[in-house]
Length: 179
Image 1 (cartoon, rainbow, N blue to C red):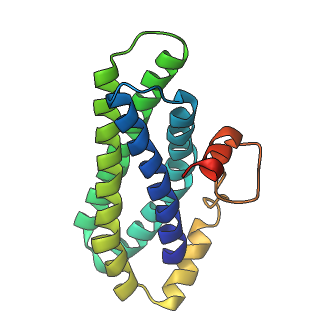
Image 2 (image 1 turned 45 degrees about the vertical axis):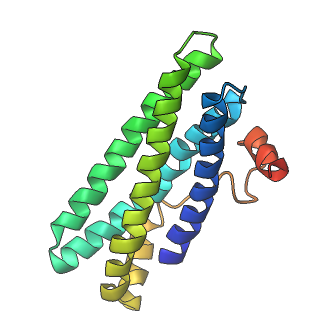
């Protein structure tokens, strides 16, 4: 399970790097492909928020029940909620832009920059604090129980797997041809 989560983090980091390049270009007055930006945010909503984060929540709940350390669970849940709100707000802004409604370039740059920072900070917290605590306490037998609990929530990564080449097709092509 931890390997899967770390694998997801590597993929999310790739997408955050693309978002950073996009808001940097936008801030410099260059044109960007808003569809790619929207697809990244949509991916974060459809996969990270509906499979990756719920998986972490199940593991966190298991950990909490085992040790009674609710502060880790509370911070993790709070961050997941804030990330969901941020991606919903960003998606709404991107949809306005894609529907030819004028949105302040400066505000979009600030929103994208904030979103990337929030995501990076969240992953750093998990990798430096949460995952090591889980790894030191949860036994192999526990991980089997966690896997059984998570089975219903696990979906294949719609972007970084071979399961569906149609979903996120433009973003997939962009990633394959980008530097």
